[in-house]
Each structure stands twice: as C-alpha cells, then as structure tokens.
Length: 152
Image (cartoon, rainbow, N blue to C red):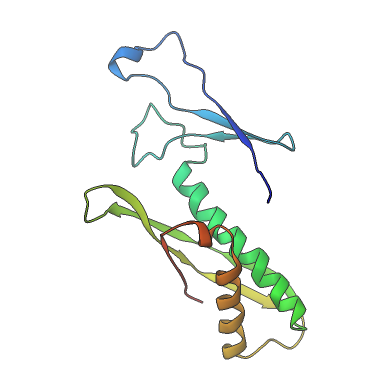
C-alpha cells in the first residue's frame, strides 16, 4: 500500500463580499516535492472575476491525471515489448454532464494519443493491445467510474 498526499491552500481576500459569494476561488495545490500550482474552478462552473483563468481547474486535473497514468503505462509496456517511443502527446478531453440522477459528473474522458516511434513502429493491432493493457493497468482509470476511451 502507498499513501499520497497533496495540500491545497485558499485565503480569503478581506476586500471582497464573502457573504454574497463575491470572492475569488483561486487557490494553490502544493505537492510533496515542493511544487506549487495555481488552481481555480473552471470558468464553466464559476464565472469571472471569481476564477483565475491561469489556474488549473479540478476537471482539467482529473483529465490530465487519467491521460498521464495511461501514458506512463503505455510507454513502459511498449518498452517491454521491444518498441522505442520517442514522443507521446495526448490532447485528452473530458465531458462534464448531468447524469440520470441529476448530478454533474465527468462521464467520459477521451484520450487522443499521438505516438512517434523511434524504430520500427508496431502494427495497429499491437498498438491497440498496448493501449488496452495501459488502460487495464492505470491506477487512476481503475479508481473511477468514468468511461475512458482511446481514439488514436
């Protein structure tokens, strides 16, 4: 078993009208290695000026964590199979929508990986198999009910 920690920090600006909801939701994510990332709610959820468009929102972080986990396993499985990956780029997208029970949820994450191979690339069946194994192994994908698909 492993335990992972992260810290968030939000500080109210005393010059805002907190009681009327007129306050910034911008905050920070602080990770154990010392990295601090500006964070904010999505502008789709909390309108300007109460968000920070330069901050990462939780929905983006959810999508990128699925994409990153998938990529890490894909690259390692490709290596184990004898293939060389020079570059892996994924412009992943998540869909936030209302479920049948009326609650909002990230219902789908679509990965759009583009891989540049260093040597002889695998055939399409082998690539699909690598993606399948990466998805099956991804800790994050195994932790959520969101549908995760790969469209290459």
